[in-house]
View 1 (cartoon, helix red, strand yellow):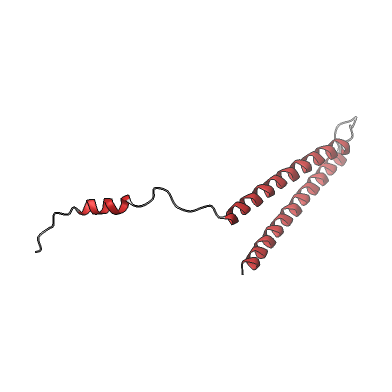
View 2: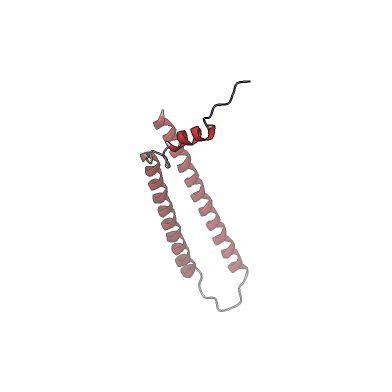
Length: 114
């Protein structure tokens, strides 16, 4: 067996590690900053669009529902079902358009990178 030297292996490691920087040397990618800005704008646009849609729905509900003098009848129920169906269809179309837009953005991004 070879005799052990007086050098402390822990001290050698501490010297090597002592030369390393405490923080990561680097900077933020400009592409990440641009992507974050795009996401913020898209979220802003989506919230503005949903607020406008809710305002339109409230306004149309106020103007579309006349004050009836008697108890609600089958015609009122049918009108309520029709309004609900139209609202569901509008929401589904909006969701489909957002999904298609996202898919197109993904495809465009993949094409731009290559």
